[in-house]
Image 1 (spheres, rainbow, N blue to C red):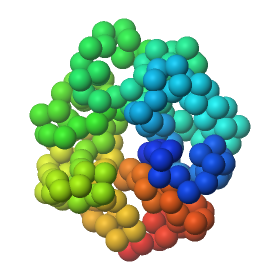
Image 2 (image 1 turned 90 degrees about the horizontal axis):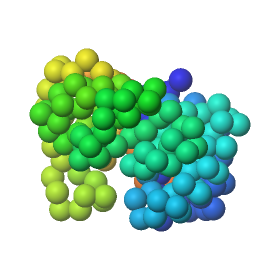
Image 3 (image 1 turned 45 degrees about the horizontal axis):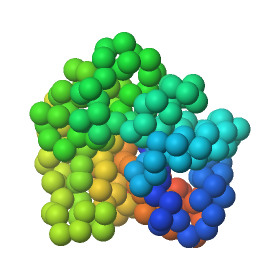
Amino acid sequence: MSDILCVTKRSLCKEDFLVRIEKIAKTEAAGIILREKDLSKEEYQALAEKVLTICQRQKMQCILHTYTNAARKLACNAIHLPMPILRTLSKEERDAFQILGASCHSLKEAVEAENLGCTYITAGHIYETDCKKGLPGRGIGFLKKICETVSVPVYAIGGIGAENIQEIKNAGAAGGCIMSGWMQCEDVREYLKCLKHDK
């Protein structure tokens, strides 16, 4: 099992999106977070159904994003949520998910997410990234502080690549979340190999 999560963004994908998902699902990535924020609830659910089918066939962990109703309708027990949505769920609703993640941008949010029952969190953005143009990364010190404070696995997000994967692990992160690398690389297996073997 890898320590690298794939976060999707169809608009960055260099080929048919479902073809790319199939390729990633055949690797040893830790999982795929289907994060397609531009879609309506109905569109997201329709896409999620196809992605879940691919992931189940390849025995790849698929984590849906934002749309809790779609996850329930599709019997998916893994969801990743922005903090404002996580806060609106009752304990019963949160407990319905075996895997519950949240995007955290401060130490306070990380502690809150753990207290709300998250089984993992993402912390970011750590390094400068095209996704957050003009915003400086929060840095490795920020990541280290979160990893030292919470007891759930922390995945760093934002500018993660082969050149810094070891640095985030040294800071205590369980691994990293990568979007553009997965969506744009020529060969997903070779890409993961580069990430795993970087020292």
